Amino acid sequence: MRTELDERWLGGGRERLWSNEEVLGSRATLEVRSSPALLRVNLLTLADQGLYTCRVDFKLQPTKTTRVKLTVVVPPKSVSVLVGEVGGGGQTVKGVVGPYQEGDLVTLTCIAHGGESL
Image 1 (cartoon, rainbow, N blue to C red):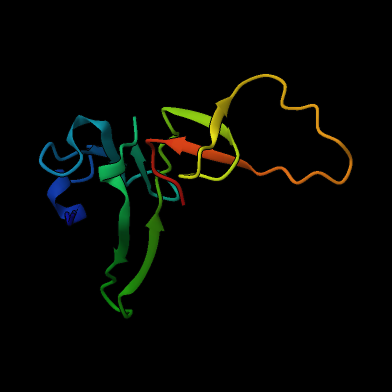
Image 2: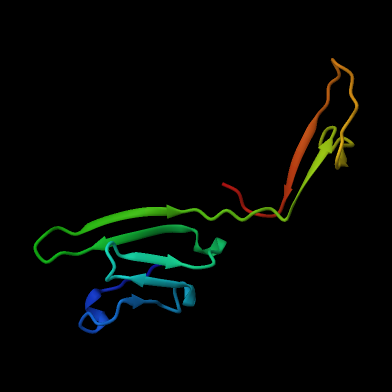
């Protein structure tokens, strides 16, 4: 995803907000007159994840550029716990597990269904 904004496009400095329906839809606005300038993105989605670049051009100074990587975490739809080996007859459990005797071996496996993690 790439968008560019030249402050000169803003009509003589009257406008304070910019948005582009083709880039982030109506969910994002760039506030160039605030200090510092702000990019606000509402209702993040996994599609918003990626590299964002801020570039500032000066008349008499070198251009300054910085990049940040935005990571969006989508929570799982559900989480379950299995007792026993996955694929080896493990059973989904809820609530209390056991009782087990001291010295016993127990395998608990946490499985997340859906979502996107780091």
